[in-house]
Image 1 (tube, rainbow, N blue to C red):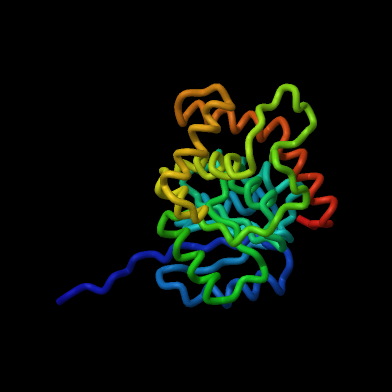
Image 2: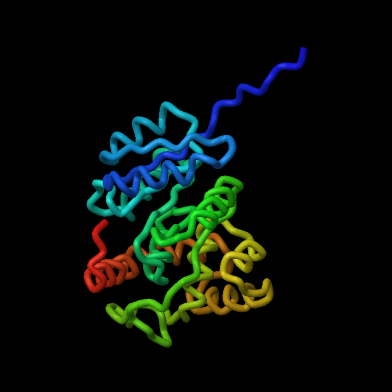
Length: 235
């Protein structure tokens, strides 16, 4: 007699303190095959404790999570288990929020305004190993040179697109994957990477990612904090 599959469902862990948002997510995600949405509406340590004892598909971090600095907590989660897929549920989808989340280790950024069918599509793609980002709105600060001006003497000038390409590269994506995520051609990705390598004074992808990480730590998060204040984002 053939045996039925008893594979344990992957847990979609929802770290969100807004009850309505958490409940809505559980309902929307309930129909994704092979998964089990679970809301954990408490702090970082509770999320880690639960995740370490269950087969986690991904962790969705909402803006209502009781975490003071979600970007640093993303990194802490990544350090705990690099295999965990992390998703930011955000009330905004501007470039600064998206790129800061990607640089912190997010596998996807999902706006709270997303339609149910797109939410299901995004989660399915992330579970399959694809990085998901929404259509990006213009950032608060529109500049020809995208990197922050503070400390400009020590920061190489990179275009906004070069920073975006480096941000996705930092997640371990190939040129083809970067092209798909940013909706540009493979040759355009190569062009931006070559220009970024030259500006950073590096010669390979690993060194570029390290240089990008240093730039993020020295300036980009400060800029992200400025954007949060201007938009009154309540993480």
